[in-house]
Length: 342
Ligand code: NAD
Ligand code: DAU
Image (cartoon, rainbow, N blue to C red; front, side, top):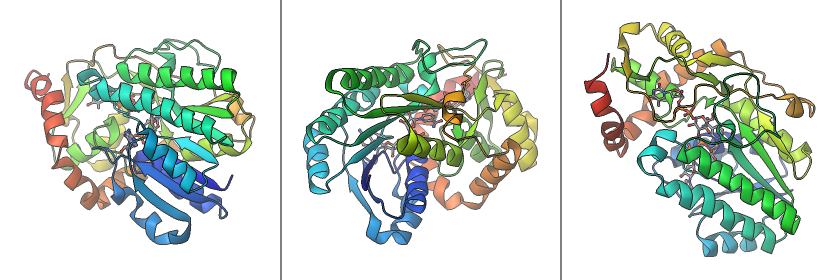
């Protein structure tokens, strides 16, 4: 592996992975292809562009555009594709599923076709624990059935099925990681933690869905990036690996901890109408990835403190995001809910 195409590299996890990969692999050249949707942001890569000038390049484009993808792979002699590009927010998939099918499903298909045509050494798909659906008890293992419950989760599961088919039919060298709820710097402030941290900084209400007793397994973005890297460099071809933080928390407890760190009152929490089809719990069995030497290294409370501090110290990054397209999404998603909040 030498010439790595990272799709969706201007998003949250993608940009953190680009930074991680360039540090960890001095012989890699990294090419980012990103459509720069509302979630893509070149501010996420400012330091990378400066620090790794000779080994990093960026192109704006759509993974669903065959011509763009094929041309880039041919021109830069790409040997590895790591696909982060996706529509990634569950609430938006409930409002407007269309883009999820176009990018997460059709876009993945175009990348697979390119991988086949150019005999790529490795195609890695960044997937999610949401493909398993709701897990009331126990821990999901990689062989468990896929039972997605949101249009987002279904689009990611569909992409995985295509990847499986390309492995079985064309012997494409693929790997997949299924990550759990990721947090850290540069996360678009529509997701629970960055939304609630930035709202709390401004003393705005925190719209908690339902009873707040849903369980998520929180994974720091650098642990996630390292998990992907371990699978890419040491994982067995054709295999899927869970990447979980081994850190299950109820939403309400995470929010209370965050408010205590910020020194803000719990009265900011407003209980609002639940997300339709809301999965109560995700939980991953990580033995398979641990066998490759990976383990999460982050202490949750310390990492949450660091993350809160990052948003406090980087208002330049999130204030301009929250003043743009975000406002219309926020109105559609929350105005009515907040008007009826408890
Ligand atoms: P994000 O929304 O922050 O970033 C997505 C990036 O993909 C953006 O830069 C966007 O511009 C780009 N993109 C979207 N459509 C594109 C297209 N058609 N062509 C090219 N680029 C396009 O998402 P994220 O949270 O960083 O998630 C990255 C990946 O990790 C996704 O595949 C997601 O399903 C997966 N994942 C996320 C989490 C999480 O907790 N955030 C957990 C597990 C897996
Ligand atoms: O589990 C991995 C997944 O984690 C990724 O595949 C997704 O891309 C990522 O968005 C995330 O999905 P979630 O739906 O779990 O994340 P979100 O931040 O939207 O919500 C986390 C929890 O907080 C969930 O139980 C819903 C709840 N929530 C979320 C928002 C945005 C609220 O109570 N209020 C909110 O306003």
